[in-house]
Image 1 (cartoon, rainbow, N blue to C red):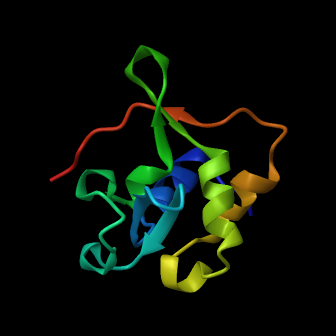
Image 2: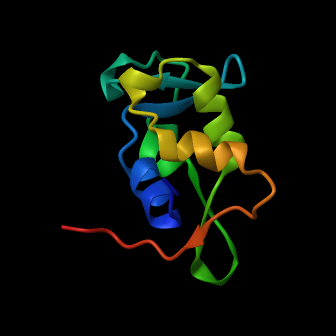
Length: 107
């Protein structure tokens, strides 16, 4: 079964949790509630994981960042975070360029 870029993007949008930047340690943290971050994490740095993996690219497009996905995968909590097979395939296929997409908020 082949995995399409649309399936990879959907898997990225289905990631669970929140990422915040800890200013004291200089590291990003993953939590499953916005309220579970300590005082060393500024509220404005907290973002849903599904948004954290996307970076602004040129021409108003977004890029699905392999480095950020690799960090999440290295946490080894795939089930809890909903890190699905299409994302693992995307990380294994480093011979292909990163996905660039136009993203819009859906209601």
